[in-house]
Amino acid sequence: MADVYSLPKLRYGYAELAPYVSELQLTIHHQKHHQAYVSGANSIFERMEKARKEGADYDAKSTLKELSFNVGGHVLHSLFWDNMAPSGQGGGSPGGRLGDAIDKEFGGIERFKKEFAKAAATVEGSGWAALAVEKASGKLLIMQIEKHNTNLYPNSSILLVLDVFEHAYYIDYKNDRAKFIDAVWSIVNWDEAARRLG
Ligand code: MN
Image 1 (spheres, rainbow, N blue to C red):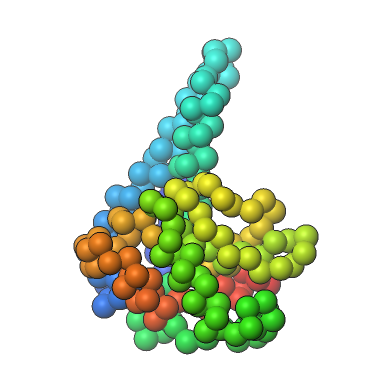
Image 2 (cartoon, helix red, strand yellow):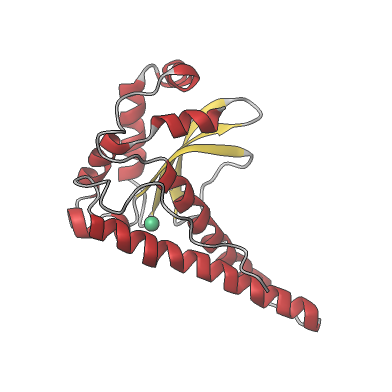
């Protein structure tokens, strides 16, 4: 069976997010951690296909839980890489429709950043903070995702996501998650987030 997923190429070089994310941190994060979710999901798809061909069972509860974790890991990392920009090209504030939507929902960019950073800082264990738009209402929502797959809102599109697994920052920031969160604002790619809002 052909692989369903493959590790996406980054839009920038491994050294281009420095000093906010170092070349070594980004390289390991992308090539080892993200790759593990790609491989994990592909191998579960393979196992399921094999079971179907053979008319055999698979353990639904454990398999689907593992699949959710790995698919979530792959999809979130793919979004994360693209919503960062090389040093000097990111940061600032969003304009256009996204800027207006953030002002309307949160009362301004500074208030949004404060709420988002708090969500990221307080993820229990490993996870993510995300800004999403719930499609039925068009409302912007902050998600606090545990692992890669808990506390997501259904039918919502992610505009911006921040990885706060320790593997995202341990080389550069040791255990200082707050310092990492603060640094990432300097390399946020708001144009990509705005493009996702449409
Ligand atoms: Mn990660």
